[in-house]
Amino acid sequence: MIFIFNKVIFNKAIFNNTLLKRKACLIFITLAFILPTSGCALPVVEGVKSVMAKQNIEEFTVAATSGDAEAQYQLGNSYCCGNGYLFDTYQALYWHCKAAVQGHKFAQLELANIYAGKIGLMNQFKSQGMAYQDLVLAYTWYTKAINQGVEEAIAVRESIQGELTPVQQQQALLKSNSLLKTTCELRIAENPAV
Image (tube, rainbow, N blue to C red; front, side, top):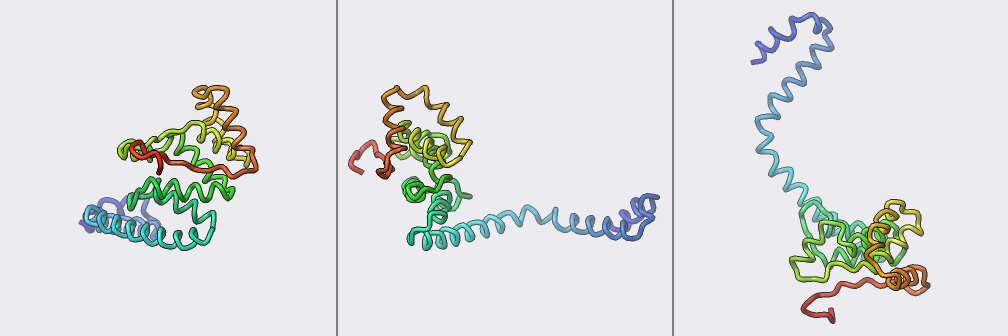
């Protein structure tokens, strides 16, 4: 096969340069060995990703439990938006909330997205029988994110604004501007006390 490749390609005028011949040969050999094994490599790559995700969660958990807002945000992302290792609605909400309450602007955005039903995690909420949408809290957290300069929150907040009554909008604005900590809530349909 390499002989045919050499005869057909290397004898052309465009490959008079020796360095160019070497590069072309290296690319060809690499492709010749990688393409047939690429199907076998996929499970290995996925396994490595899973192990790395587990390690990331463990590392983030240590930092997050000690109060590191960035680690809390990353841990929330691992549970809600990760690469498939672990999805946990409660943990995603819990860690995003911890970071958002500390003022992490992107955690505030993600928390607002959770409450607005704007991310894939909402399918988990529905399948688990949870009240998966709270537009007042979404509006509150979008406003907090906007106040910290997260421009992408503006359009999303405007998109849900029409679904809120003026009283609800006012409640959300008061919550977002108050000195009191804004809380996070996840209500379970069967057990409202949770």
